[in-house]
Amino acid sequence: MSEYVEHDNGGISVGLVEKKFHTFAEPPNALMLESGAGLGPITVAYETMGILNSDKSNVILVTHALSGDSHVAGYYAADDPKPGWWDIMVGPGKGIDTNRYFVICSNVLGGCMGTTGPSSTNPTTGQPYGLDFPVVTIGDMVKVQKVLLDHLGIDKLLAVIGGSIGGMQVIEWVISYPEMVTAAILLATTTRHSALAIAFNEIGRQAIMSDPNFNKGDYYSGPKPDLGLALARMVGHVTYLSDEAMRSKFGRRLQNRDNLAFDFEANFQVESYLRYQGSKFVQRFDANSFLYITKAADYFDVGRQHGQDSEVEAFARVTAKILAISFTSDWLYPTYQSRDLVKVMKKNGLDVSFCEIEAKCGHDAFLLPNERQSALINRFLNRVSEEEHDAL
Image (cartoon, rainbow, N blue to C red; front, side, top):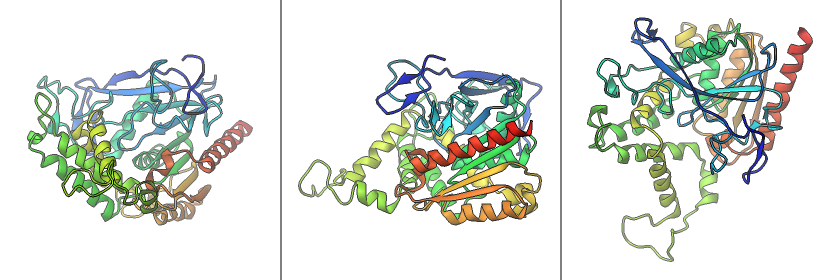
């Protein structure tokens, strides 16, 4: 870790970080997945920041959403123009203060940023897995994170923190490994996808699979389904915003012209913006990973998977202190879903705090600068840390 670095994006960065890798489940010791399939070997990419204290009591695991990765904060090089995806939140003096906490973030199973996924080499064939990669679940992703923590010698987490699909992983953590998790922060998430959320994911998947270059997932040696993936990203990106955000940012303003062009190019600024988001996404993400991660999110159902259709029963063994945050303009994972989650946890007598933050920018609000969110997270972590210290 380098010395802290001041960057133009504001605040102090954690500085230079390094992506590391851990490989396990070498055959014949494959990892058994929820589907019943075995998978191995598995490599997990991860990054750490901050300093681990002597009793390893200051560990925070951050989990990422669909398009995130292990690069949660900091820079890979001194001239790197872009920091990690949550650099606004993770760093010295920030909401997750790396002066106090040791932060770990890994790329999910099925991803394409260093952790084994459909673009990885299938040891049986010597070629990328493609659709031969087994379908994975949120539970499988968390199981891999648990193996990583075992490798790092971490047997207790001060907190697990994540938003959206990352929040699903947090829920899985507190339910599956209650003895390991002291506290959890859930941001803009849910215990199961609504029909609306599943529908948008399916549109994205169909866009990819309908691309002429998809080739049943076996596209790695030829042209990739970039058009389908770009369209999937455009659809998904709309769900991350809000009506108010789009009206404020774009309205009906035209793109680089004074009048309508009477063609099918990007006449409006919002059209140009979505096309840009789609084209940028295909440069860094794998179409098959999009299929697998969205399917894992759609399959996630706490009541069915852990409680025999009862979410209250699913949380019966949970002991973690919980902070749940939702956002007023999030129509993908609306506030009522967070409130339902809080009610379930309170029925189990858990220590739960809940806050709905007024924000105009939709589901993506948890990823954007927000002083109230930062303050809530910082105060909650400090309280939990102090209570744990006093209990020793």
